[in-house]
Figure 1 (spheres, rainbow, N blue to C red):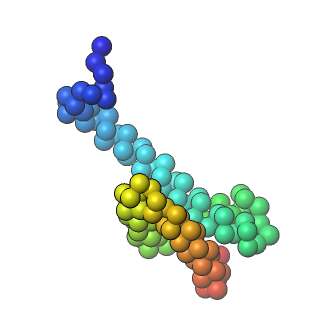
Figure 2: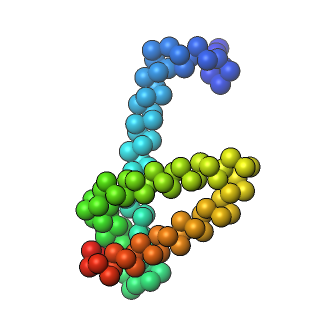
Length: 116
């Protein structure tokens, strides 16, 4: 029996490459769905009198309406999160509150612009 974690030939084969490609695409789709549903979810639940289903729908629609701008925002979040994990995950103590605060202000800006 082959130990997959220690045998690189499994990943370098055609089947291994297909597994990595399809798995990455499915993971990216799940990440996109979670991002679209939760971007404004928590700030809306805290700041307004809405139920969570309404907040999820509004967040999903807001991402659909501003897709490319918010995909750049998602890349910024992913990049800073990756960089903050490099020093033994200690950078997350700064990064996570920073992005939480930024999401709060994104919700306020969207409300002032009349988008939500």
